[in-house]
Length: 436
Image 1 (tube, one colour):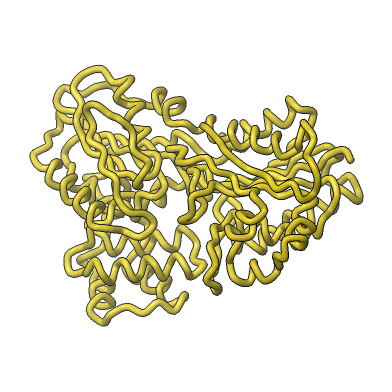
Image 2 (cartoon, one colour):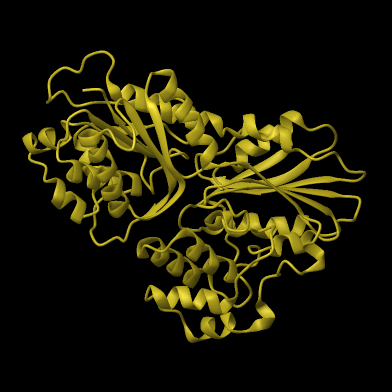
């Protein structure tokens, strides 16, 4: 993974051995540890008597397809949909790029073609599903009776609402012709194997990309409760559809999905463990707070800041030098009109909470290389960040109120630009507290 980053010189020249360099090394190790080319091959099933068909959806799905092609013995065909700019040059599996996080017609076309390709499969055939985060928006064919326009509006509202990923996917499954196990139903009676790179807290494979090949846990009523909770209006006709039990997604009791094999091949924990190894190699004690931390980005920042201050004052829960690591998926309730990203928002709130605390540096990035809808993976934070911002006329609190973390760190030239990493285990956060 190639990274580029630029840094402001307002605080004076930064000496060699910049602590942020170590933070970037940890992030690079975290992403490398969950590269599909590394993690996928060990989970491949044996070839079938008949055809092998590959379907995939998500930001990592094209690279997963490339890993499969490199290690597969025998015939292979299929179709994978990924985000624009996240494709790979595969020879036998077709790659389609589509809109994310807002669905577009390319995603609808990909879903429709998968359903068509699934026709006529037999028990001698094998379908391998390559599923990763982002697949919910990318595989976007609406269920019968659901208008794509209304589905897009609901998706956009959910993204701004502060809803957790599990809540968003509960809704997406009930609005889809392929999610919640419906794509797998179309492949019956073929043998089915699902390989998942998890971007969700808890690593429930049924939640990743809204589980197109995995039985659902929820109902249309559950989806309506989520929409009502966040004040998202739906048409009367859609409300009636969601309450119709005949439209429910297949459950775990459905015999057509009973023998579907599922393996989670990469998780946030693997990424955090890799970062922790780098920390130890550089003489820093790592503390992994958790791989599934959820909540408002600015609230999670307050919690991390409190732990950092306890280390600085008390050498608790561990002495300096140390690194506090965490993963999961924060949320942002959008109230302003700035250029955000949940990792930039986390760092901006952390900067305000730490208030220039000495010896404390941080990084927060999305492991897919895209923080929200922007072109950065995340950003880095230094003890001098607020002072530099003030010297430039930047108001950190006003930027946070406007959800403008991207704009804030862009002015400081402390964004981290990686480009698409073609994997995705969600957010990576690290706070480095040096010896002083």
